[in-house]
Image (cartoon, rainbow over the protein chains, first blue to last red):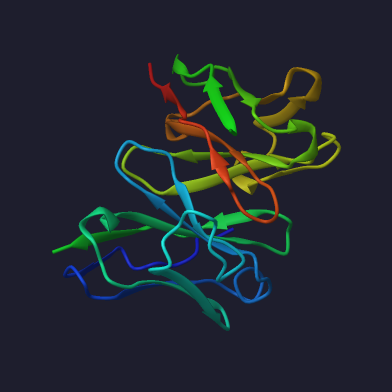
Length: 110
Length: 117
């Protein structure tokens, strides 16, 4: 099972918006709406930010949004803030009843 | 409040075995799928395995099938991962995660496994 493809890094200035892509195949991202996104600060456990492609858990800022088109899912963060600087991972359920993560994207807030 | 607390990590020699545990509290453990996810030093997250609420269904990533065994004890609210034939590349922080409703909603703090001679 190959990892989902994410850009290694993205950056943006405070107040700007950024988008992180997550590309898979029809056997995972494209075949199911079970894509979720996680934020991880250094030395900390991951935190769920988006689930079911575009749903936000309670307590997560509405600056975070998700979408999907074909085999590619995306996470958009608007109004960038310093505390958004972290690593972000996507994951998807697969047709083999397993889960696959993306390689991760390091977000730098300039 | 959901709490997941991993234990059992440590230093083990190549070819050795280790058993990780995850103590769950704050929710009805026996109702939920749970997973192990690992993260090698400086690397990304890698899903390892999950197990159904009653323990009857288990799924593994191909690279760990046959070496790792996931299990649970619902009476003790505990999730386990038996790891055999360990290799240097198994060195990682191992997280226990609540794998409910098609997402990983809660995570433990992780336990570090180091495979080295």
